[in-house]
Length: 106
Ligand SMILES: [Zn+2]
Image (cartoon, rainbow, N blue to C red):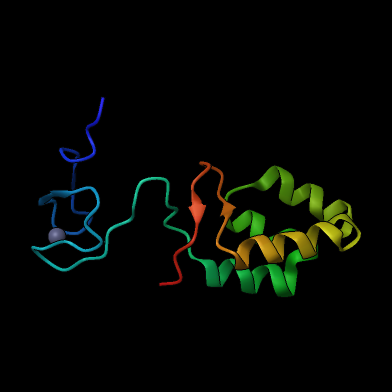
């Protein structure tokens, strides 16, 4: 079953029906979020992780409160988990609580 060419979504800004693969709305020009792509941004996640990663701040940002608290009590997995998260965030493959990838910079 291939529905890739017929999948339509509604523009986040104006509600107009547009193709799911359209990066921007042809009607109003608003940027669209792709399937499996988080609305959360890489930069705040990275900044939070860089400065407050040992507190799990970037994980609260991603909605992952549980592992955020775990990071807090383990001091970022003694720094190792912190370092791994920093790299994963920078590479654009960090996931939020919904399993969506945080890869947008703007
Ligand atoms: Zn629109």
